Image 1 (tube, helix red, strand yellow):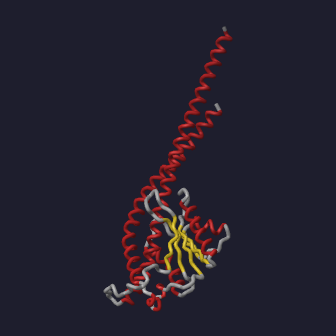
Image 2 (cartoon, rainbow, N blue to C red; image 1 turned 135 degrees about the vertical axis):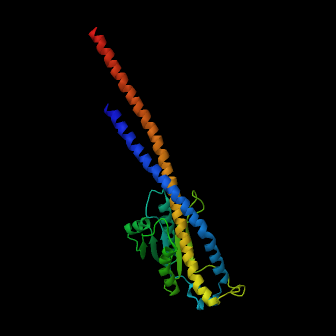
Length: 286
């Protein structure tokens, strides 16, 4: 009797767990749809800005626009790691942290000093627990990042690069290909990638003047690139969480099926034993 009661308690516990994971799966599915819409809305504008800025690049412009400079030797680099604030998303955070570690190790192997900047509690917890020096942290950006969030994240790094205190800026985030394909990637945000400078400004008719346009265009490019990384990361997180919670729900169903069979067998054994005892007692009375 005690054995069947234990199994029944386990069945109830697994049922409660399955209800929770199923609810989390549905919530992640809803958030994934909204996040995917934001990714699709941000991609065309971000791609267009990157194309224009890359085409406008010319070496002589770096004297007027520090954001266009390309240092001959990179001595110091900033690494911006984007992770989630919550877990229960499979290997999502672990993959991002691994990518950041590989990048930091590669830069250190090249003799480049690094400053680590982290967005998300999971990344902060990992590197802080291991005593790695962290230059800045952000844990206040939720599931719906805004352009203001992107500006606040990149502004300091942009100013450090423009002032010459940093020679490169990398962003480690997830590339959102689909809900099932979100590989981590390390993107060099600065120096700005572009052509060799043979095209320059001669192929464009600019209004207002090039100087005024680039003053606004370069910060907008970096802000939008950061915003796109943020929204892709959120979409990738929700996709990973939905997959993880669906797997957990399916596994809970398998466990319930096994426990139910175990309970039925135990109950059958108990009933058989009770019948045998009754029959034995009746025979003894005869």
